[in-house]
Length: 461
Ligand SMILES: [Zn+2]
Image 1 (spheres, rainbow, N blue to C red):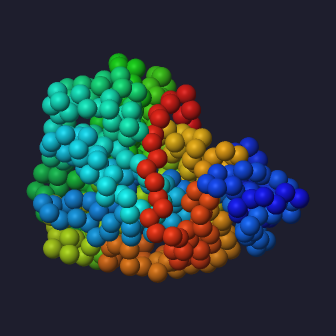
Image 2 (cartoon, rainbow, N blue to C red; image 1 turned 30 degrees about the horizontal axis):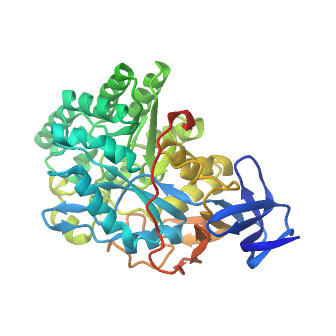
């Protein structure tokens, strides 16, 4: 019996890097220090897992927009203190958020964002958004990569979009610095043309929204950025893949040797385009749109097969005040939805409980894959000796009706309201500290820390 640990979780089924079996896990300080047979470790504090509990690596959400600037002087309804509590209770121990597009220095914008995140209760890093490029801003990329903000976001549509030549220039600069360029990939002119056609045919009713952003816009943009990736020998990431056309474009790129990773999001996996016929269809104006049920099934297949490496939330805590003025006009609605706390419970229910993903694959797409893609592995995303003790203890039998946790950390509406599931986190540990227990934040304030990325495509999933 070893008894020199700070904290021991005893007797859960542990999804460790190489094995899934009942074990004791010992934590010393902030790190995982031992894995041993059940009943053989003791610590200053020992948590006896109830029978059937499962211990997995803390989730990594690769796509959140916390306290997001949605108009001049207007932010979404959360901040890093509240949003990170939602992360902790729902099983996410690291978030990768964004540095909003800057008109001035990228470095200054990144520093401002780091200061905002100091109130976080879970760990974090950032993808700086690159828009309106200048030689000076291109020149700042190596310093950001060195500082550990090594993955960048580039838009192919919206006001922050870059044109094709600018995209190629940024991809070259990012790759040369050892970073990773990621894309909101929807071809702008295809979107514009499709939107005009929908408006002429049926006006701006919400039912027309998915038709205004066809899947071909995604595949065209992915085709372009993966073409540049091939030409430049650069790795590339695709945010929020919504359906089959985007998946085909990714598979085609991979078959020709392009290093490409991609995520999908909760809403594409658990909803379908029937939501746009609902009275509250405005809640689901998210870009790219939620596609049909066949697309949803294809995303699950792609998640199982490894075409997609992660599931993110694309969380943005809009409120009724931002959404209701445009509720009957998709062109007036700011796109996006809250979902940071829904990501892991919904992935568990629709994945593990309903048999679409095994425990291994659940762990890969919620934690290990994101860590590998974004340069956080092996410090994050994996249960092995030496890794950060970021852990979530699951009660797989716990039934819930959404929202499963007390609200009050952001938005005042809920896209998944009333949906039901089975399986919830009962304990979340962040770098050795218990930060949440049974749906309540139990941590010690702002103990989250910036965690630098070191992108290494040899470790990609
Ligand atoms: Zn987003």
